[in-house]
Length: 425
View: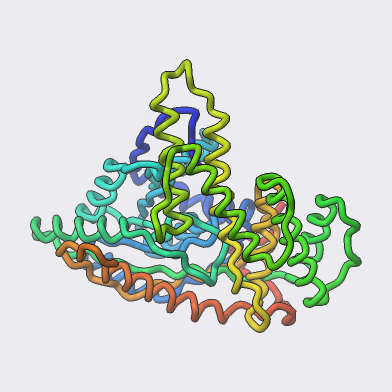
């Protein structure tokens, strides 16, 4: 659940010291965490010299990666290691409210909080100050959230370019140089036998659904039919839970109808009215904002978190359902990574967490620097700077997506240098 109702928002500032991030790198804790928790066991960095040039020039540096997996902020630690520079990163407030250890580790690695349910001026000013000072490069994920679709890019948030332009203007006044943006393409590639992995994961899901598991088969067509069948079962369960019965027909209109039903009910509960042309993400954000603000506006003795939790969870579900893109499993476009991502989304929905058991390699590609103009972006239209970031990321992802194996192609052996972790206990 991404809306925290246990306590009001309190800004978590970044840790500016070098001791902790240096120790984390020297002890290879990033490698250990990624291998054990995320099964990301190898990496490749491309065009690192572009990043080196911006560091050597003394620019204020903003990194804008695509955001497809929870591992993304951590894998950028490998980029940090190769350039011997630490990084700052903006992270959602709810990530600092999991465990005391994770909150401690996040901050020591350079993360600071952003309150997605409101206007967090302190977080924005902190991000601007980091770029103005040039103390360290700053990571901002312009998509805002992750949804396990490595080959597709969600619409970008305009706050990224507001921060960059404001910092560029301040740097210009101070005469301290430029602010540049490096779009970063992250692409995860499967290193194991996806057919066997998919068969085993689908068998477990079929058992959870009280079905007789299908005979073990590595036939791609059979596995794909099983995956679509499990996907439909999950959708039907949510239709029964929230609409009283399962509907029939194609999955897309059924999914869209359920999303609309979830959002409309939440908006009614919170006294909101959807604006014409609003997307799902805009409506979800307003619902989350209303849930948080209305709850904490009540006297403590009158706060019943249950109805607020229900609306927040329903909004999260609507956004989650949208993360099952129709074009991801079209004939002729199915890759092993798309199969893995789709199964893991279903696992997250049913188990509450993903079973990270497929060894992955991540490609980290650094794009050319984009110089940020100091002028304010045009009003009433999409910022051209944001369009440029979007185009660069889409170009990289389209090219990188072709490196994944077509589903059903022979698997390749895992070849990981001895210095990087492979065995997972």
